[in-house]
Length: 106
Image 1 (cartoon, rainbow, N blue to C red):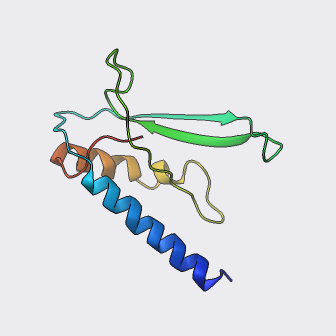
Image 2 (image 1 turned 135 degrees about the vertical axis):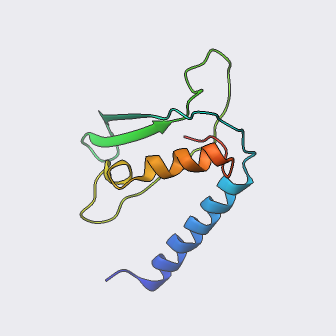
Image 3 (image 1 turned 60 degrees about the vertical axis):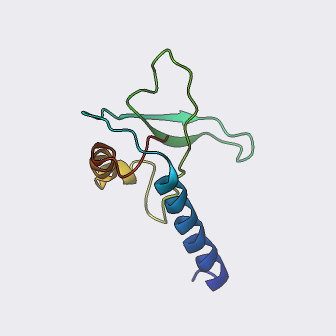
């Protein structure tokens, strides 16, 4: 069973991240085209490679330099790096971007 103080910290972090995302100025995107990039990256700390997926905003590969806020989705037990994408997270994000409810982020 998970430590109650850890659960509270994780819940607080989720609320903080959601607040940061809502504070990001929304830019209207007529047809958002998010790109998901899944690959394996080496980890010196863990001593082995880890699988990750990154969802990039539509304008990420443009020539104009721009900084993006980053949201880290940490899946739970029995889940994997594809969970967010497989469970419809990308479609939900595209809808939020289209409606202007959130701004672009990685």
